Image (cartoon, rainbow, N blue to C red; front, side):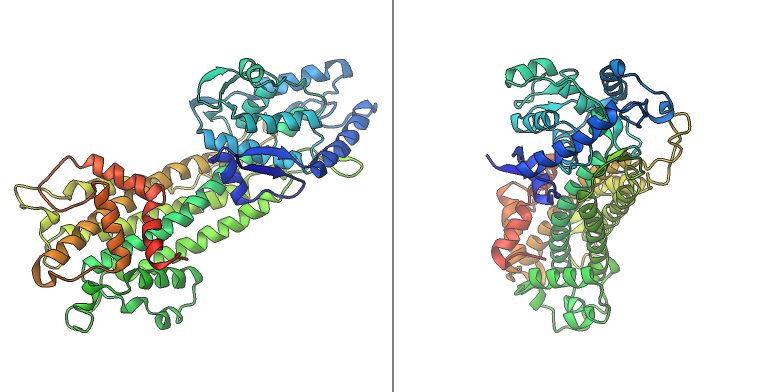
Length: 518
């Protein structure tokens, strides 16, 4: 099994995906353990001093003014974790919990939190053993970190709370630890705060979302190309010399992808020189690179923010070389903003995809294809209601695009009087990406049926699709998706198409023919 080594430097996007989705094992480097020990020595010295130090010998948040005597400090840590593990609602997905645990461990490994090495090593062991704390949907305001989700994870280190084992079985944490040969820890001074004061939940979901969007946007380029081809559109507008007049990076990349996917299309060649066939294509076809490209540029901006956050040591207070200092680095605003930006991206890319699909179904706009791509229009409804499904999803995505990060709500007796809502932004983005996946899948299903009708009927019968788009049609047909014919139970076909998009199979089918898309 793959292993990810966590050191004093940042983990990578690939590391996060490997642990969150690939069940990779996790280990701390010797350098990380040495850094942890150095920071712990600073905490131990401050804990022994008569002067109160926030988070070490005081209460927390609005209760920070109380000095806690030494004999109550272990109870202080237990109370912190138990009280903050106050999440409610459905369980959060396994990949999200594993991602946030890895990212918290990465911060612990920087040597700026004051954690003990045995506590950090136990967290690594949980990941390697496949033990996943049960974290609930609601509870984080995205300020002072993702407190409640991280507290549910910290609770398990104490041998409390519930977990899912490697097989997914729900059980008490104490039983899962014992079965794996692991012992719970008794948290010492500062460790409670070190385990819960980070942006790790929202950051982990951001990294996973960026990973998914990079694949989805290339797949959206494929879908757009198939729609242009099957709707007898023109590829002239994607020419590099036209894109160079507006040097937006993502736009140029998307246009180049469309050009490559459409290369050697017999359908395109059949009308390429007929300049009177179409003066201009509709925006949803002609402007696909402008929309997909702007989405790409937004994703890469989000990736830059995520990269900086991966390199951060987020905790409060934070351990420096010889002292502990309070700070505000736990505020999730940088991550929350880009999570909201990406929800806007998902909504708009889905919106233009739905418009391309809709054009196939209208006899007045689909250039001699049957209404709704039906086998016997009137008797059959074809793909009429598949577009309804797209429209319903796009409407939902527009609602999800309303930013969470502008909605602050005060907490902790007004001590935490401005919060980021980054966790909420991340949660709705995951729903947005699921919706985008479904909308693009239905466009591919629609375009493939249109393309097959185009190459078998009418004036273009006998022409051939581009090698790349033809590969997608064949992939879909092998999985029972989209073939012309009388009406049939459509939902299973849609779900099959969704699975092919989500797994990357559609993109792989194209790239096996023309090489990797940008």
